[in-house]
Structures are given as C-alpha cells and as structure tokens.
Image (cartoon, rainbow, N blue to C red; front, side, top):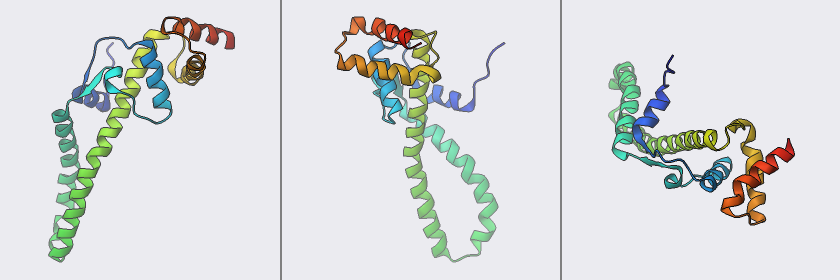
Length: 166
C-alpha cells in the first residue's frame, strides 16, 4: 500500500534538490534549535538546495490558477468602471504577486526545513518522536554546548540525559 503524496509534498520535491547524505548530528541539533526559534537554518547543512527556475514555474502556475477564474468572474464589472481605477488595481495586483513570491519561498523553505529535520531525526533518534522530544533534546543540546561536550561524545551525552529525565 503506497502512501499518496500531498500537493505540498509534490511541490517541495519538485522545487528542491535534496541530498541523499544523512545530516551530521551537530548540524541536525543546530538546525532544530534554529527552527524552534523561528530562524532559517543553513540549507547546505540540512542538505537541500532551491531550484529557482522550478520555484518560479510553480508560483506562476499558482498565480494563474487564482487570477484566471477571478478575471473571468470580475471582467464584466471591471469593464464598466473608470480606467484609472483599473490601472491602479492592476498595479496593486502586480505588487502583491511580486511580494507574494517572497512569502511563497519563505513558506516552502520552512516546510522543507521541517521535513529534513524530521527525516534526519527519525534516523538519529528512532525511539524519540520528534514532536514529543525536540524541545527536550534542544535543552540538552544547549546544556552540552555550555559544558563544551566534544562532537564525538555529544550523542552519548544527549541519550544519557534523555534516559535520566525519563
């Protein structure tokens, strides 16, 4: 039984190039910390890259899917109003389209970041579900940074602290 991908997942797979390499533990923990704080994580450390041409194509298709039916519905009322109002409306719509692309990119980047973190989390911490443990492990990671735990001892330190809390 195959799981059907949602439209959002299909778009993400289309506009982003994903690395097949697993994330380093420290990069995963740092990306999780940044994501939880509402910041953008480094895409190269998370193993993804945007294909800008494909992002433009997808965004254009989304805009057209909205504007064509809207234009068909509003054509008659707009044809009867003053052309100056139509020109101002066209300028506003154009501005909204261009500004919207930045929001589209930011939303897609947040989604792919979350997807990559969850995918790597399942490999690194298979017995600790992301939604339940990401904040706890972030606290332990911050404590490890303060205590200057080495990279090679980091995973053991985190797992020991998780077991102690349970």
